Length: 331
Image 1 (cartoon, helix red, strand yellow):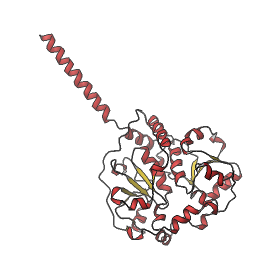
Image 2 (cartoon, one colour; image 1 turned 90 degrees about the vertical axis):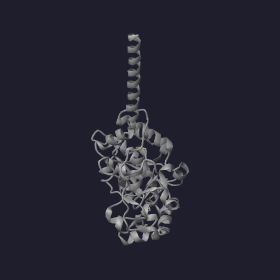
Image 3 (cartoon, rainbow, N blue to C red; image 1 turned 60 degrees about the vertical axis):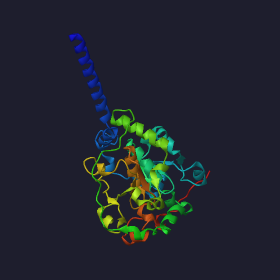
Image 4 (cartoon, rainbow, N blue to C red; image 1 turned 45 degrees about the horizontal axis):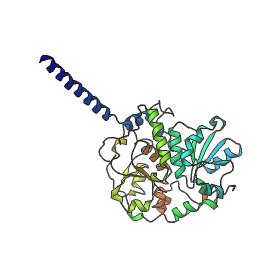
């Protein structure tokens, strides 16, 4: 009888320990591991890229200068038909999903910089951010995209700023407070180290494509309450020219740290991030989506919403002066 009781107790104890271990395992959130890794000196870039150097942009003039001397490798991620209609000399057309495989096949030591090109600089910003976070520190996004290379391709940015005052009346200087800090989104890739989780998430995002990472201002304003809106610009611009009503201010190279305000972003609600042009927000959204947030970059940023007010504040914006009319090739 005593032996049976001891056996029963041992079985109960073993079951308790097994359940306890399973619960402890369930508490491990890979997003915490990944964020800590990317903020550390152990990250592929040996620094917290998001809160130091991001975004990494290159002008059309710089691309041309480096291209003329053979010191830059140019990756164009537009659709093949658009690439054939006109592209920068010596550029390579690469599908977004193939970016990592392609860049791993390049002898990057042979080049001073690597430029990623799209139509407006926003898709390329998203792509360049992912490559940077993977450790490719020579990667830059062409600012303003092909719109800055030649007037034949400038239509998208010209249209955006020409219609960029539709929401002037819906901007305010009244501040909104950040949400209460919570937990990061729950990630479960099955990996255990920051490096492994990063690689798994990059593969997943490349397979997912670019479209889920962006939202138009029209769609955002049709459902403002459906999004946690991040004004990813300085506190000065938050006050003047102002911000979307209800938007919360987060400072570039400062706020998106575990020890700062990263965890005030909601894990259970879509997040719309905007900056002045859509460039910086595209870089940030790549990082936030890596961590599992349902974040989207607002296309063209505030330039597509309150352009004239931004001009009055002498902000760095797209204009005809940005269009260089450099030579392009077709095939």
